[in-house]
Image 1: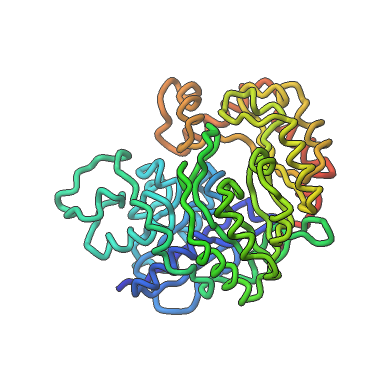
Image 2 (image 1 turned 30 degrees about the vertical axis):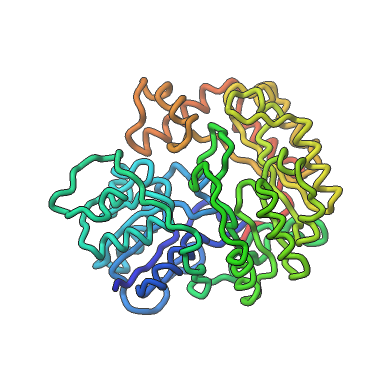
Length: 437
């Protein structure tokens, strides 16, 4: 059996919240169940690794579950985390897990200066990479193709390697909450109707999203996979037992499966748990959200993007009216509405005409902002990246960053100026909360 340390880098997104690294806890729980000695070094909160025996495998996350959908293109902070971990444990084998290695394995391995990358959903890839290493695999890219292949006969097939298959959710051990500083993780909790950073756990009841938005990176795929309801409740109760009375449901489309989510809400009623989730406007309009409120829902994020998103050609046909109706429906149920806004969508009339800023200021919801990045793993990247890279697909993360920069510079609006004005609005979420630290 191996001694495994899972490493989580710091990043610039930690200024408001430091959320639970749920996929890392999942991997840690399963690895421990398989007999390995496991530790977690969350460099966002821990200057030094936990005390214990020196690990022989370092699993370095490039983007934990809550960041994987909008993973960063700058690998600098991840490289710092990898170098820090290697300096502390110079004899350990190093493996990068997460979306970067999954989409550009060779470039990621070189940029992070690690021995291996593991391709696939982070928690499943972490577990199966350890299995592969234990079986003697030495390939630089660990994947489904290397699971049972003799290292001496392994063909070099580069980025065409298949990802590790997902471990069935019902087969995972419970997350290893005891290995992480759970009471120090935060998210937006609702206090007297206002969002504030506070202690918060995390649950991922269902993985995947069946909608085909071309700008969206789906680390859990486009097929819905649900955990057993008993398992979901067990995770909530385990976090309650360590003092976390508030949860963040990371599910991308909470409520899409009415039977499944109705069962969860029925089980949560009366449990004293407050929670925030995320979904789409049309899902809100199809559900009785008062049942969510009775189950403890205090806030819900909507992927609003833009009032003109339906006309941008990114396969998101949500209208401005649907967004407003969903926001008001949530408010009427006593649920604080939040809206994600995506700045820089192609052919976005609202963004190009400057309507987006006025619309965001008038929507009766708190909002957060993401800039559009062209990320590998999205069909929008496949469509636009070659156009900004001399007709060829970028081969490195540096090229990808330049592609996004060129896209922004060619955009027919000043996106930086719009972001400055958006963040000055009173309903911008960052103006309601105090940055951590």
